[in-house]
Image 1 (cartoon, rainbow, N blue to C red):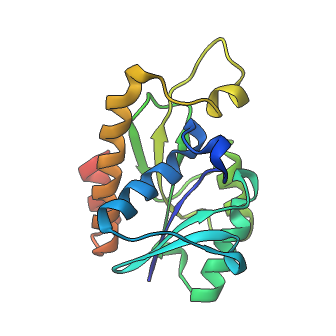
Image 2: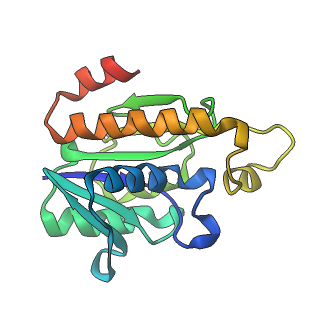
Length: 182
């Protein structure tokens, strides 16, 4: 079984913010697959079942995402190589994707939390570019909504992520996925 995690923060206040791009990607994929998320208290998250795997939106807030991921991994006995995480990246232009299968957290607190509970940093990931704003504090910027002029780039990125999820769930080799989409 595969686990695809979208990182974000729960609640209406954060729903369409840059920091929630992981949630937005999973919600778009779930909608396309005609599945709904169900709140699962024992996992501290929302789960949607899809063919070949699970979609997880942790409800622990970004900085504690690892707690929810660990609960699902332990319950379903999911191997690290069967996990893929989608999260925001300030260092990439809006809508630009960067896929990796290992590496550090790059300062991302959701990934730091994840690495603190998993036995490896060799976790497949999609870094989704949210751009950077020179005159706003990072915290304010990541918790802001995308600008109207960024809409096409965001939609294009989300649509690409949906194809990546399909490939991942169908057991396409991740190096092949990286070569296709990077």
